[in-house]
Image (cartoon, rainbow over all chains, first blue to last red; front, side):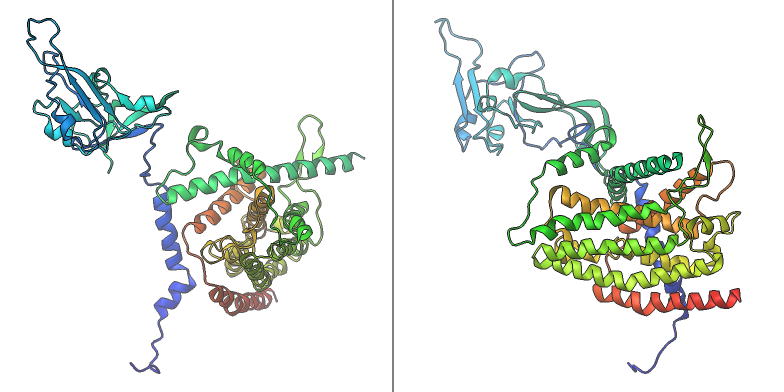
Length: 191
Length: 327
């Protein structure tokens, strides 16, 4: 390219003199100033409901008649790589035999659990599911040793709910730890 | 006697207001920054984060005041005060409006502390002193980056103070007075100086941004290359003094632009003059914050070449043309 050849660029000069590009830039940021923000107001006002595939806190399920699905087969205990599940099946103390085999004790140590989901895969009756609760921080070790009764309690997010939305929430804090309580009535998409 | 008392009251009121101004300004700046970047900004302290500046203030007060072992202790302590005092002293000649009559006492009060005949000269001279605090702070820290920040600040101040003053001269030539009250009075009835001195206004605005160390000219506290520049070693309230200086300088620069070019308290009669004045100042502060989050920072050599090769010749030409037109 011939360096001595010099094109006088009037358009470019005028653009510089009247700050055209700079003013265009200002209008872009002005537009963004009044656009909708993408910040999620977690945990005070909003929370994220994960998809169905999410592996959170364990849940034990019941069937439609309200009967426990767990049959105390101990397969979850055997499949657990970290050995954090303890299952003790119901003992026959009456001598007449029991009609339904259920778990007598079903305990999990969340401090050791790594949420791999192998117990869920091993369960033959689909009684054990990894749910969608993930705010598991607490102030005492005791909070992380959960028993059957706590896992059978109904969940805030229904199991059949698709997930992947932001819902209104309330930050509930007590002496054992933090819990964000979702309010499923107000939902919005993330994008 | 009552005159002296009034001046005392005005000094106290103005000082208190100027001291309190950085509180809303930090909040507004962070909110505007957040929304420009499609975030929310401060949100959790109080409704919509409105109490955030108070939380910041309490935090700054209770921080440990660290003086580096190798620093010059005396200079290190005095530098923030040297930076802060000129920023406040500038307000002695700034007029906020015309005479108002106090409602109950039925006594006329001027809305300025003093009406110096050489108002602009005084403000430019005093505002230039503020850079000594920055240089001394950088020097006394006995650390590489603060020293570089201080040096940059002095070089920047020298190159842009000239263009700033020359841009003022055009206005002074039109108005034939150095007094700020006279300058505003000469602009009443929509004869705003921005219409007669558009080039002067642009030069003054750009040089003013450089003078108060705002982006795109905030090289003394360049986070990218200098850590935090001249206040890298400062913590606690001494750091807060530097921040205070910066915000007060932003306010006084906006006020100066309004007085010199945008007609001061001149405006349609349905609002009182002081309201127009405050609205214009608020708009300029918003523009300064807005530019901060729009433009990247200039490189140091670019800064120098803009100052010496473009702004200074332009301002000289502006004076020349203004003189020719007046003759």
